[in-house]
Image (tube, rainbow, N blue to C red):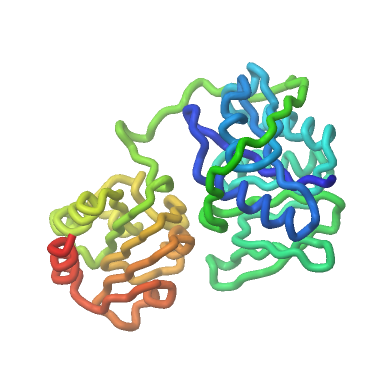
Length: 316
């Protein structure tokens, strides 16, 4: 049976949230196409593959010492080996730093069309129609490939994360990894203790309306800590030095999709919205009832954040 193949990513021995979203995407697309959902895992051994098997019934493990550290050449060769060994119709990749790096190379290697940075998909007449944002999210366009196979990258939050279920089957696929043209010399954090807010379940984000660094800390940081979440900010907050760049949400920052995103004092410029529109629940706090952020908010509170947030904290 034809397969829809999700590529699982992992960091420091742990699956990323995006990988669980891809498992959900593979299942939904495969079901609509009458195909079989599957996943491929690259690494030095099959330990991560066994973890992925909790979320999807068929897992292919490509284990090689050359795959211990990510390289686009290594991943491309490994994925091609799986596609060549199986009847794969579609390869699903996370629109992450790594995914963006290797997705197009995989498409070339397997002679497939590619659609990038998508947020949903549907099957129509046996073909998969992908939806993606253009012009910073002002317009959505639909695309499909004209090739027998497709490669697609999905933005974070496009699908819910798949829940763990029964134990799937893990099969080994051999690949000859050679001619890797790059070598990773190590991963350097941009700053000590930098946090990856893209993995947070709860985010409290502040904007220009917080007025200054002290007030930002008093309201945004304190509420995030009270909720057991992470704090973040729009670009003006980072440019002003109120918090570090690792906590910027937006087109030039991080893309996040937490269960709860509280946007306080953020007008809702399209550049910021591009980075958080996939959040499950968005609570907007702004004095301006015409602020664009209310157009995408699940709940909107028109009011002074310096009055609203203290009241929220009192109820927690």
